[in-house]
Length: 250
Image (cartoon, rainbow, N blue to C red):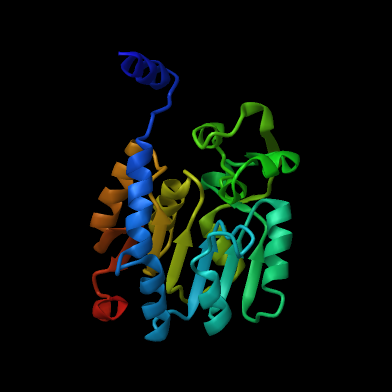
């Protein structure tokens, strides 16, 4: 009875309790599953299918980054986007010996609406696990539901740029892979990209934190754009239907 009351109260505040066993089981299954995001990326690069990359939410290029080792090994033309200044400086340092990389110290947002992000105070990071440095978000709720104390959360002013302006700024002629990890803003970025770009890359984005109304709109858009998609771990992988080498990703 107490649990039901607690869930109802939390729901009123705009949060939802998630079954921790479900999350832990999903992660354990993903860790040992034959099919994984790492395997998908490895096969894409091995089969010479990726020559240009945009990674939105690149963080420091090390922490929980499945893409980093492939960028370093295969040197595709790459744009790495990271809005938080300290992460951005670490990102550049991590890729200092790499070629063909452009760094963008901005938040990707629709109509440049984001000018600050919430993050854990640097002085409080040691109180949390490694993943906490990577959950910076435009929504304070995103940090709170990860167990961060409100008193440990600070705002950081950030530059803002739309996906359309980003593509124009770096004069891309082609895009093979778009990877998005924007901590609950992934859906808005993917919708904006699909609406304002003629490129048809492979798109990988984290879906578990996207609001349902936004996710529903995104799924409808993926269908209208003739994109095949499937769930892989905490991500959705989208492939253009004309992608003739689909067998090469497995």
